[in-house]
Image (cartoon, rainbow, N blue to C red; front, side):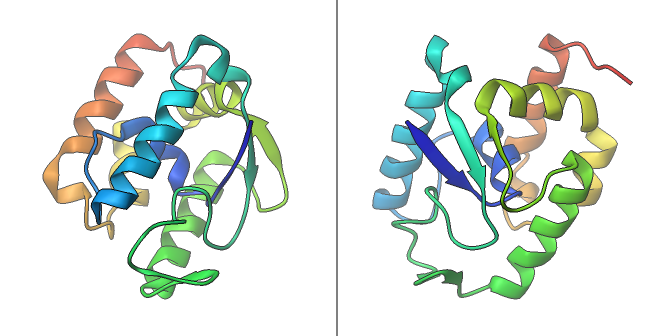
Length: 140
């Protein structure tokens, strides 16, 4: 199994709590996370892309390979790519991605790179990330 992720979707996936833009979007994202959350899910390959991805497929904001808010999403992707030291065209496993998040992302960094995200105000991601960072040792 292989998925395509935009850079900002690594944190979205880590923090996903079953909410989204439509029932089809939520069902798709839930299915992706069910795969990634299996023990063997850590070996699932994720290819980094600079356009709509596996998570975006059923999103009502998707217009072929772009989003109706592409400019805003591109800013999120750039800040996440820089923070995680990743770029389009690279691949990593979900396990490697989680290790990278634990190593490179702090709550302070989260607040910087996700500042313009509409979902940030709900606190879902901050709570999930706090829990994740509490169970994964950070390497500086």
